[in-house]
Length: 169
Image 1 (cartoon, rainbow, N blue to C red):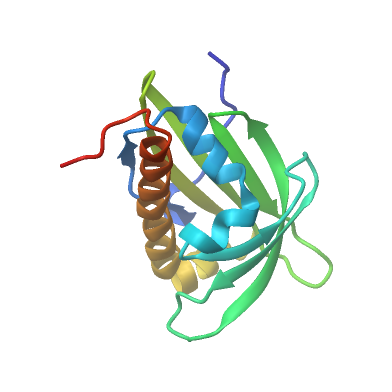
Image 2: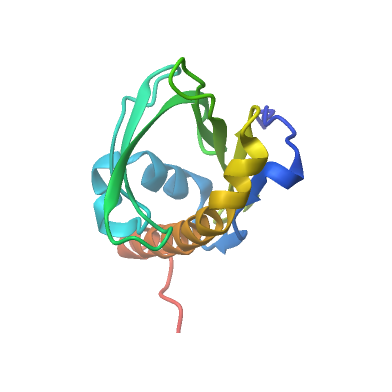
């Protein structure tokens, strides 16, 4: 099994989604996470995304505004970790214009050959971390929870469509 390198972050400035148990193998969940063209069909938060998913590559996203507005907004982060079927991560780097920094980790934990767990975290980093958490932690949590539930549904449906799993009653 590949060793994951997920840094430990301050829990006061880190959002963690619910953990979902998915009745599909990690390979199917990984396929859904990396099939960026199909995000608009299943992901309620990240409704459009473009990237090569190579380390250092931009991840150009269109996100639903969970803060209460009805608009969407563009957001770009950069791929910082790829461990097939286990971890997909990207980060917001501080710039001359903004000191904001963050890292999102999407984690797949195998249970057995046909099931796994998924959760994601967003660690707000840098001098503005506590303020960002106060301003946006609650809506990021809702967005990540919705994404986890949607990923579970999409992965299980794909696995069932392929005739590899019986539909749940």
